Length: 236
Ligand SMILES: *Cc1c(COP(=O)(O)O)cnc(C)c1O
Image (cartoon, rainbow, N blue to C red; front, side):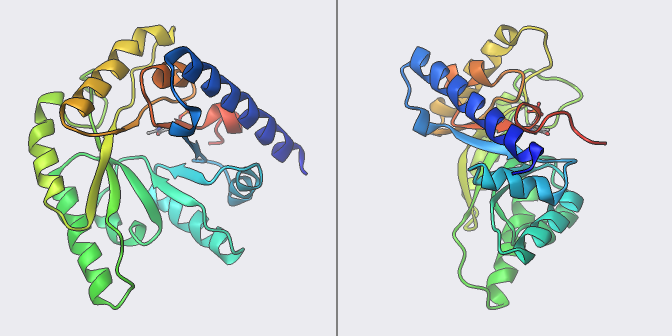
């Protein structure tokens, strides 16, 4: 193993231990929490090392990065479950759709429309019938001007729109919590996302990043999106 691979495996073991502790405190089963390793800015070789370390789910936030990485890995016979976690422009849906296992950032009806249209075309082109794409609706719980996502009161409308689409399976809700010094400060954000999800009969909660994932898991996260804590500082 390379030095990078060794540290990825060690970091992942530490993350799993912290998730297990958070689950223990919350009376949850760690098997309910999926780790998505966020590899943005890192090369395909690092994704390969992450898979060797036992990760199966990989997150990217830009189409321009996901596509060449997915192709490089495919050429080596590797097919992680790709999660698209960033803002997805409608003109990128066509390229990204054949590769991804889930979208964490659905936040407009127009994006839902485009997914529906492109998935229909893929079927029409004779591709095998596809399962609906699991999508998380992104909610800007903390109402930060700088963040993507809908306001909580827009959820019923977007949920209604997304649920009508044959090629979309609403998996739950996603949020990116504000940057704070102490993760306890964002506990109410995670709690609010959970309450919002459960009020609408949704189970999936994509919440928790490097600085706040233990709190997110205590508050019910089912998917944590982790970059730096597994892979170290991002490359520019
Ligand atoms: C980059 C990114 C992450 C991972 O961030 P870390 O703090 O490095 O764990 C998670 N979610 C989204 C949407 C991101 O863009």
